Amino acid sequence: MHNLSDTAEHILPEIERIGGRLATARDAIGRVIFGQDEVVEETLITLLAGGHALLVGVPGLAKTKLVETLARVLGLDARRVQFTPDLMPADIIGSEVLEESETGRRAFRFLPGPVFCQLLMADEINRASPRTQSALLQAMQERQVSVAGQRHELPSPFHVLATQNPLEQEGTYPLPEAQLDRFLLQIDVRYPDREAERRMLFATTGAAEEAIPTVLNAPDLIAAQRLVRRIPVGESVVEAILNLVRAGRPQDSDIAGLEDLVAWGPGPRASQALMLAVRARALLQGRLAPSIEDVLALAGPILRHRMALTFAARAEGVTVTDVIAKLTEPLR
Image (cartoon, rainbow, N blue to C red):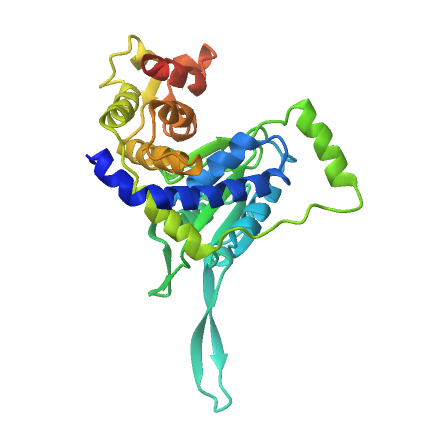
C-alpha cells in the first residue's frame, strides 16, 4: 500500500510531463484513425502497462492502420505477420542456416524472424496452427526465443498486437483459454459512428494523406512503463479490483446464480492486469492516481477473454458482456 501524499510530490512532475506527451501522441493517432477513440486509448493503456493486446473485429476497421500509426507516433520498429494455416514457428521466430566460409569451414548462423522487433502485428492469429500460435505466445511471455538450444533475447520494449476476426470461424484454430490469458486486454473494435465515417471518407480518398509525426521513442515508452508501476493506488481501488475479479469466480462469488452462468472465472492474472491497466489509464489522462471509474472502464477489456460461460448460459443467449455488467453493478 502506498502513502499517496509522500509519493505525489515525487512523481507528479513526471506524470505531468509524460502525460502531456502521451496526450500529443493520442491526438496524432486520432487524426489518422477516425471514430475509434476507445480502441486507441485501450491500445495505449496496453503498451503503457507493458502488455500485449488482442484486437477483435471484422476486417476493414483500420486495425492494421492503427498498428502502423502507433509504431510511427511512438517511434517503434514494427513488423507485421499475416497468420495462415501453413505458417511455421520458424517463420516467426527465425531459424538456423548452415553457412560455409571461404576457407570451407561450416557453421550455423541464426537468422532472426519478424518477432525481433518492438511492435509486432500478428494478423488473424487464429488462422495459424496451435504449434505456431504457441511459439508466438512463448515469445510474448518470456520475451526471448530458443532456437537449437540457444536463447535469443527480444528487443525492448516488445509488444504484440494480435488481431482476430470474430465472425469467420471456417478454417481457424481458436486460441486456448490459457493462452488468451497472455493478452493484457481484449479490445473489441466496432464500426465507427456516422460522423467519423464521413470524416474518414474525405481524409482517405483525397489527394494528400495526413503526415504522421513521431512524438515519442522507445526509451520514452520504457520510462513511461516504469512510471506506471510507481503510480500510487488507493485502498478503495485495490478493494474494488479484488471484489470485481473474485466476484467472477463461481466458488468465491456472492452473486446469486453465477455458478449457472460461469463455467470458470478470471484468475489472479486478471487482478494483476487490472492493477497495471488502471494506473496506465490514470497516466494517459494526466491524473496522479486511478479511481473506481478506471476499474469500471477496464473491467470489460480485462475480463472478457478470461471467463467462460456455461453451455446453459450460452443456450439462453447470455453473453460475457452481460455477466461483466452484473459483476460491476456493486461498484457503480
